[in-house]
Image 1 (cartoon, rainbow, N blue to C red):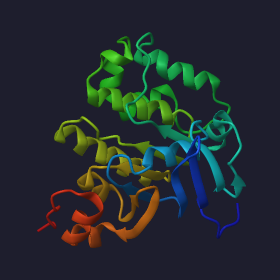
Image 2: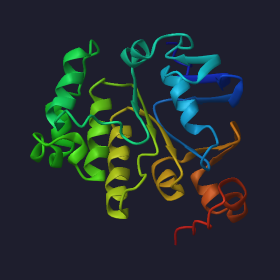
Image 3: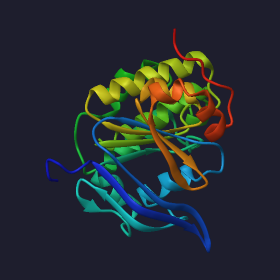
Length: 245
């Protein structure tokens, strides 16, 4: 990858479910920083994430370059091995596997080696270490999210995509999740955070992408969006997020 090239560059991306166009000409780039993508339900955010990691449906057209290499048309396992980790909406854990089995299963199959191992995940999330023999689906919502993040980290990603990680979590757990995201970014992992929770998005990332009807309608900063009540109403349909004192 050339020194001037971004980690991820999305250009003219379209995503389809059959004939239905759900992502239209999306363009953005990410380096080794945190970027948040926000928008209402049904705007195409999850479809965009799935297009990046090669999950079908949807069918992707356009260009998605990671470290200078084209991803469109590559199978999802190759994209994962190239250095993109994915934390899907809803966690997608297996009821038949314990916490430890979730982690060991991934670590045994990854050819990409690095800082992350099951022991490193337990160090990041001590609560998982205490519950390593418990089924993944018997954990609390916050613990399930920790496991989903830990599973993605075992691929030793350069870039982590997190889709609605705060969904269904108590405010205290969301605060812990924010700190986890900040820690990972400080270690040099690029982060694309897809969220409806405006507070979490602006706490994690200063650069904000707003998605409306399958398009990137606005690129702004957390500071500007927090102070723009009209933009919050227009693009997100939410009660204004008060600017910090």
